[in-house]
Image (cartoon, rainbow, N blue to C red; front, side, top):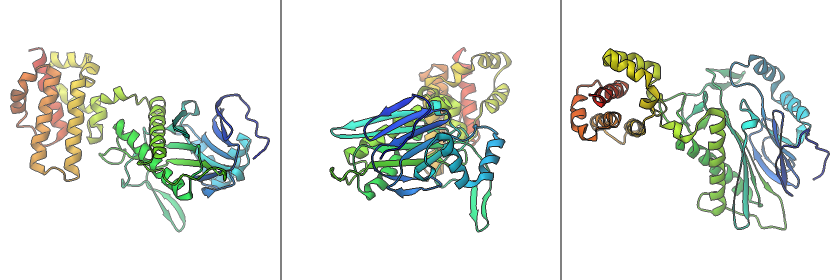
Length: 382
């Protein structure tokens, strides 16, 4: 495969015999230097193709309230917009699988993994601040005979470009997409990313896109398995998971240690910092409240508080899916709330007393948590 593609800058992420990945301006382009079988979600020319030369990801708009770009994309329609972006990148529209996102290409992450003669390369951008969702959550769009109708709108996208270093069968290419998706969901689970549509952990966003490519080389045998039980599937999963976690660290500040925060753990159940401070003003004496207010980070990011908060979230999750009966979950929540109070007070020996003090708390788990904070903070300096 030859041509005259000449990116306007020298920001080359990977250059090899099979492909070269370039980043410039708002674009990330993988130039396929030999024939590949590609499976993609590209609005134009998507599905399975053997004749593509480019895989591309681009920033199509800003993440918040970019009405001008949204109107331009909508007015052009998918085909004309695809052609417009490809012309701007300097690639053939008919030979390109395209993905779009509001994420900054400066935050695009490359990860590779290898085993023996196997290698995979992943390029990912990711944003989940407004659009993270769990499969089965309420949707924001519906397709009708007259076209698409928006029910609601959110922003956020995870785009993944996966290049395999060996030929695979068409079935294995499709399974690679499944493995890649499972790895994406694993990354979100590792970071406890909340859905924006339900009180659950997200599995992706509503606008995720991907390109998966494998070389068409008759001189090499096609691999037949890309699932987790095969080494090829293992390195796909590892590279995709690591790339997406790193992309989220840059785009959304989701560094793993920061996810220990009380509101990250329990925000999907309605616990916000504003709500917490408003209620704690009622639960704490004035001087104690003022002291907590000046030391919010020390309280809300305390590792013991975080452990108890995530444990509370796990109890709520298990109760929601029927693992725990209602009566059992109520007591389990109170036990974890007592652990939270112990951690904040630095008094593990006070667990029985704290559990007893929280016995009369209302069934609302947010109220239970806030009372536990008040109990623990009061006890810390008593």
